[in-house]
Length: 113
Image (cartoon, rainbow, N blue to C red; front, side, top):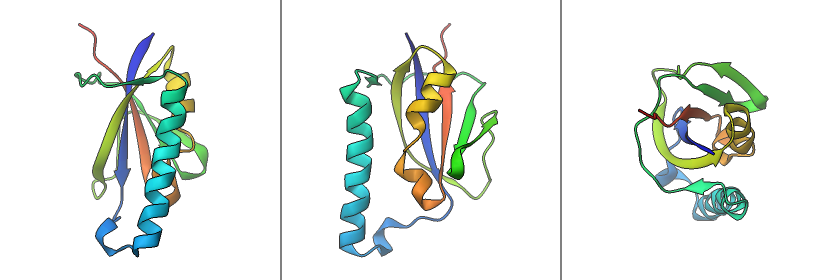
């Protein structure tokens, strides 16, 4: 099984300006989504070097080739998951709460020397 980094990028999301109830609801979505991946035994905690190739998942299920992002996006956080292929890792990224706020998920294989 391979490892893939899911990097969460946001255009202009400032959590400090969210009402507390909205922030709690968003935090719960993240916990539920990541918990679902962990429950499948697909979560990894290793922090390793990323490979050069990748894909980007945008709202509406649009998948593009390459780790190319908009210059104004910020990297919010990332997790490392286990998957048999880039396609499976991309499937795991679907449902990510970043997509609900016009963010994107970059899917990158972990570099293996």
